[in-house]
View 1 (cartoon, one colour):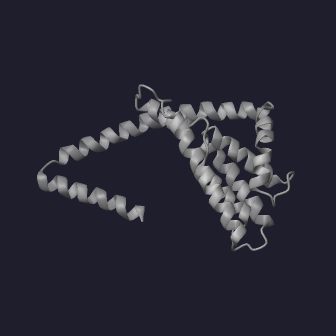
View 2: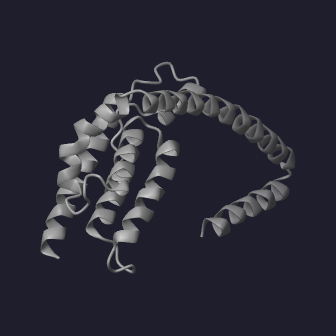
View 3: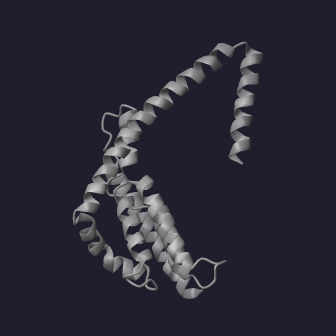
Length: 191
């Protein structure tokens, strides 16, 4: 659908500019937006590399294992049908930790692997298991302690206080996760 909407907007904009004789504005907008996109990409890439490096260092130390142990009681409640030593359990833990650190780009590959592992154990391949549904819900809510991508975007746009929204992010993501998990658990008991 978006591959229809965006080209349509572009075509309408060009026709509108031609009718009003403002084609130079189109040229300016194209080159200006390309320059801004490249600058933002470079700044975001640097921030993403930094935090991915920190996660890699954390993986080599015991920090990730400690975070997994802290999360273990919560994960037992959320995913009761996945045995603790199973591969999917570790992948789910890593995904949640990466999301909490605001590293959605690092969490995605681990999350996809977790879904593949859960699908292998799923009895009915055409229907999501409760664990798979819960995992999707947690990823959608995406509790973040350090919203690195948002901080990077705000920094790249010269925000005076790029970390000023952290409290709001905590309230929003934790609230969304609690509401989603509560409703999911109630519906899973019912069906």
